[in-house]
Image 1: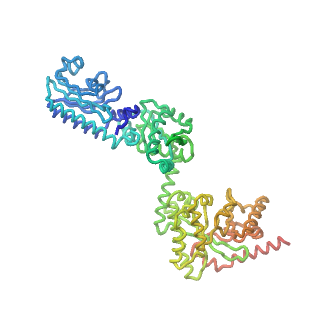
Image 2: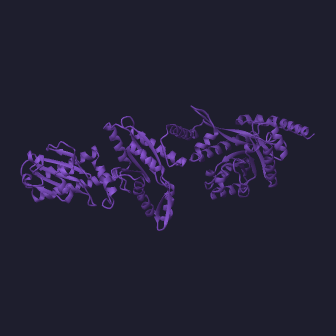
Image 3: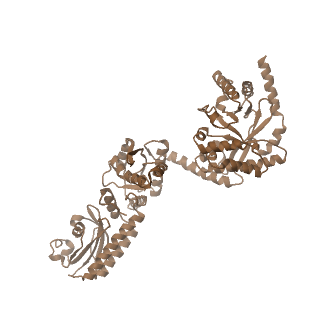
Length: 607
């Protein structure tokens, strides 16, 4: 509702601006109120109008030759009831100095005239309900009372109409629905020229709800209510420019393109805003904005709003104050979103996702110590999708958990098949912090294995996103529980980027996997050799099993074995294999032949 309009000029102006716009369903309802006023007063003519500070807007007229729908207030007959907030009834306008100069009075079209202000509960006049007759007329007191009732009902209708549909309840500002109506009006009226839609984000809502946890919802609501006036002040918005409450803590401005570009420049220079949330507690707010240029004659309103949101989200993602809509980035994001949807469907499909298994070979014995389960996706239209793309798509969504559960289910089923054929081969699965952070993950996995006639020794856990795991107490608890239940835990990608040695003491690790970036240049770069040798020596002194991944050649494998590395995996030994290829791999003597060749080269090197 239009609450607080007397206290806030911006709200009052926004409300009156809303009323001045065309709205066919609303104006049709106002026509019914006008016709009802005609009946209760027993006269022929009526009209109903709304106002802003300068003009009267005729919403409906009957039996009165009013030619203009927009009239300067100073020229209207309604100015007296509007300013006095009182009903004006004149039996003969020809003898009343307030009206006798009016053209419609001189022409004899309006002799009797009555005007009742439509006043909301805060005392703001939203418009007037008027009736007339081409002869002198004196209504009864009962008729006048009913006339007042109709005007009051019309005011309640206007207030409730906008409260329910076009005004944001928290801020009192016109909402996104009204913005859409305004953009559609520009298109309908074939307004020429270029416009700009700018959408602002004032606070991350996750942070806002966290504040409500400590300060209560009242403090949060006061904070959210303060954004509109603060943003208007910081951007130096002139009063006629409407600020729309787009969504909670997000606002929009729709202006001509020149004005929009001025706002963009101001937004780029906006400093962090300090907002008071309770007592002496202030928080720093960083505003982000996205904008899009468009032509009402050529562009679809819904699409322009979508583009504005896309630009805003890109601004937030890149942590840049303001960004223009970029169709190339937008296409990529849309493509990613479509692929994400396809991935969710692939999880349900029986033939899109599948696993391959890459052997892990002992550098001392040549024995296959286990395999790593690697996820693959054969998209029905796009073909094979990179595993890196799969993880990038799913890692920030609940699909990551769904994928992990799919992998676990598939691995358990495969282990049962291999066990029936006498193959006892531990399988490593990759697990992210989102999985570890789910209470009960360890017990659930253990129970699933037991139900399938398997044991915790049959599945090994490769811990991904180590830094994030260390930041999550639930994840650390689940890792401890996995260790207690007998699972072997591997730390993945050690040596990639910044690897903190403190990881090793805080996570119950059995096997350290050296990232390929740490070992890929040991044959060509002396510095890499020194680093790899000393890292492996340190890890062995700490009693870890050391596994090197990404081994592509014999010389690298030989040198790592010499440094004390226990196991290796990579294309030098084997590419990832289908489940059906594993029995043949285990029956082949290739690893042992390779180990023998390594030993021979090592002997030659030593001699």
